[in-house]
Length: 130
Image (cartoon, rainbow, N blue to C red; front, top):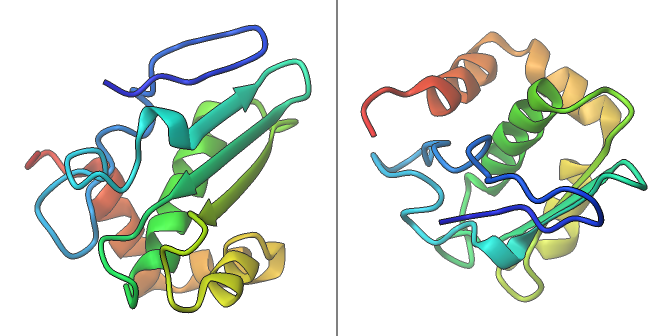
């Protein structure tokens, strides 16, 4: 079971545990993309850090996974929380480029304005098939 580690709070990660992988009928937790140790919430500083491990080094869906995590956390936490999402060091062939894209505000807004991408994110967040 995933839990948040935090300075003040330690709620379960029910917020992100059931996000479905964009390419598989399994959750990110079931695929070991996320683990308890990969999520840190510091309520005192208003910061969330997630480091996830894509299923393969050349995962083409790493940015979609990161976008799903960001959208879900933004919906679950107050707006003052800063969310940083990264692929785990050494887990993706294009680690620097993926990390840059995952934390670029303009790219995130543009991605969410794309109806096809928004639909994919919504499917991953609201899948009842898990």
